Every structure is written in structure tokens, then in C-alpha cells.
Image (cartoon, rainbow, N blue to C red; front, side, top):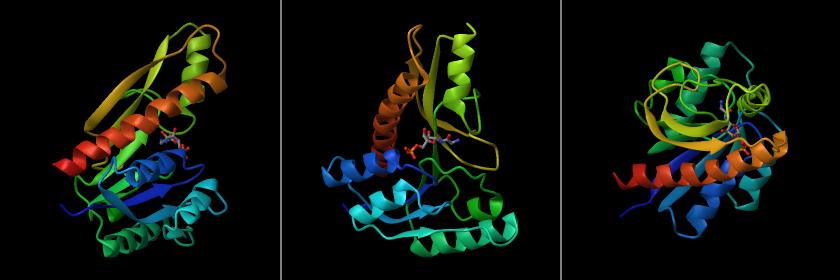
Length: 193
Ligand code: GAR
């Protein structure tokens, strides 16, 4: 069976990118990363790509959002990926991009479906827990059909508890550990289908 071809899109630290790389290198995932695309320069995720000799590119917005998404869509489509993985990609993608990859764009978000969409989801969940509004948050992996923010057909979810003695750092660490596993597991299921 040929390896699934992935493009991984990031905006920051890239710990989820690292989880995918590690799963590929340990043969847990039968996949290859064609390229890492970052919306920001000088982020550690780019260093991770370089460490593993994976081609990477920073995609700056120099034009309108519509043109940026169209250019990015053309660039990624030319790579001919089987799956586009948004692993901490912090920009909303419009149909100019998404039309190239129907049912092929997968997003990871550190909250349960419908809760805390957008940025700072973990911080917002932690604050809600401190105010006694929730005692858990979670992680989801979903398809990206349109411009809805962290919304779309759910592929996997996992609940993550928030304890009374947690700090933001302990919650973040718990969530990231779950993310690394659920993202790799979900990609594994997708590429077997
Ligand atoms: C992850 O927590 C991911 O779920 C989140 O960005 C972080 C990236 O971490 N994505 C979103 O919030 C999307 N709205 P990483 O760069 O260490 O993989």
C-alpha cells in the first residue's frame, strides 16, 4: 500500500506536527509529509520540520485574504496531498482554499464540539472551570467543509477533566497529550479508508 501523502499546516510550536512525524518514523502511520506550511515565520514548528528534513514554507499574507487563500490553495493542490492536516493552523480558511480539498481538510481543536471555538480555547476553558461553570473540556478532530470556525463533521472527540488544583499549565499539558494521540489515531483511521 502506498503511503498517504499529507500536508501539515501550522502557526506555532508544532507539537502536534511532531506527534505526526514521530508516528511516521516509528511506522505507526503509513504516511509521508510532503510539506509543512506555516502562517508565521520563526516558529518552532518550522525548526521541527527542518530537523526531520521535511520541506517547509512560510506563507505570508501580502494581498487580500481572498487572494492569499487562492494562492495557498493552488500551492497546496499542486503538491497533490491526500489529506491536509491543520495542526495548530490559526487562520480561517475560505472556500478559495477549501474548494480544492472537499472532505480532505482535517482540523484539530482543543475543545469539545461547539465549545470555545477560535483562539485561546484552553485558557477560556480554564477560566470557566475556575468560575465553577465546567469541570471538563476536551479535544476534537473534525473535517473542515467551510469557513465555520473550529466546526464541521466530527471525526473524534475526547473529554479532558479539569481538576480543582490545576493550573493553566497542567491543563494545557493534559490537553496536548490527548491531542497528540487523538490526532495520530484519527489520521491512522482516515488513511486506512
Ligand atoms: C493545539 O492545541 C491545537 O489544538 C490548537 O493550537 C495548538 C497548536 O499546538 N488549534 C486551535 O486552537 C485551532 N483553533 P502545537 O503548535 O504545539 O501543535
